[in-house]
Image (cartoon, rainbow, N blue to C red):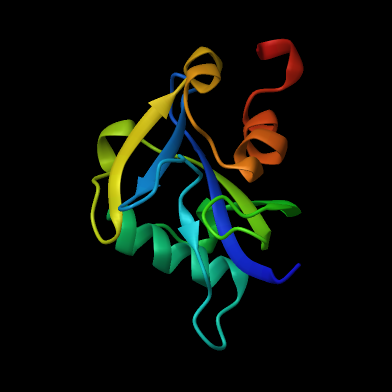
Amino acid sequence: MPDIHVSAAVIVDAEGRVLVVRKHGTTRFMQPGGKPEPGESPVETLIRELHEELGLELTDADLRPLGRFVSAAANEPGHRVVADAFSASIDADGVRVQAELAELRWITPEDAAALPLAPLSVEHLLPLAWPAGAR
């Protein structure tokens, strides 16, 4: 399976809700982030993507590395997504939909059960945001 390399953010607000986004022309929600430009590190990619998609002004000091995770790609059949993931805590009022995003939602574990989510979010990233005891 061909690999798609991305950087992804598990962004949590003060209430413990997690930010998910949906891109134009897609049905599944996922963590914000995206593909690297030539020569970008994973953290540089994420800082740029969060600024472009959500208007966030973060630095590498705002992001905590979570690891690298692999899942089936949500929007590219027959591909795998290889994600370098980072976490951050922000004010929920500090984000706005822009660029290729159609919408954003701040979700709880209960909300997640009713939303169409990307495999990477379900299998790896949301469990990191909400440890088993908190669900």
